[in-house]
Amino acid sequence: MTIYNKLLLLGLFAVSPLSQGATGIAFIHGTGKQTNALDDYWTSEFVDSVRQGISSPANYTVINCDFDQYMWEEAAAGCLVNQLTTFIDAKGIDSLIMLTHSNGGNIVRWVLSNPTWDSRYPKVIAATSRVIALAPSSAGTPLADAVNQGNSFETSLGWLLGYNSDAVKQQQVSSMSYYNSTWLNGTANRPALSKPFEVVVGSDVDSAVWDSDSYCAGYQYQVALETTQNWLDDCSDGFLECSSQSAAGTVWFTDKQLTQGQEPLSHQQSRRACFNLDSLIRNHI
Image (cartoon, rainbow, N blue to C red):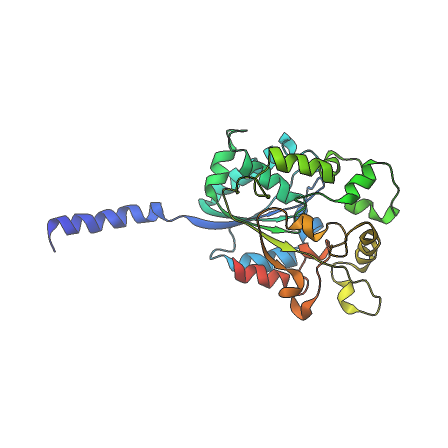
């Protein structure tokens, strides 16, 4: 071996440890102010199952932010990028997978669509490899319109809607139409997002008392979501119409196409280990 080849080989060994990055996954909740999203939003069962899909399962973070705010607010997007930056730096992440649910997808789209809005955004965007969006509210929901227009809902639905928060105002159909046409990328007739945005669509709600599948993620939530379906199209997860969920990015699959037993995923079930959703994501990443 020539001296040149030896030096080249030594150089490769010298730089390779520094050039090797790491894959990480971030679990990003939806509407609400979270302080313990692991237990109160996702559950350890779901998170611990999904993160086994990356080479180093310890490279994960569960975001806790105030997503009752408008997506661009410091408590929302600012909090998100702060926590992601801390995670990226601590673990040396250079391939970040963001797993979002519901309105969390809008906040991630805000960051991806507006890289010059905040000096913290570019680092997170550069590290991101893709987004997997579970039931994203990309085109809003008529339920948000109804709440903000003063119509009444079952009291049991307060957990879902949050009533008069800015995040619910943001998710009005007219509001999201405006944001999608001006500030957000990834929808029709708009620039594509800079990173893949893969969507899982929930298409129905099962709440039959005799059906054991109706009890996954809490039977009471299934009943509540069955009620709100009356406000929505036939294809909906009880909170979002399928057309809203699929409005941005590309659809990876619609629940019954891949779920165990061809079961639908309600809006509650699409953030839990229901009907092999966790293993589908784990195997996909």
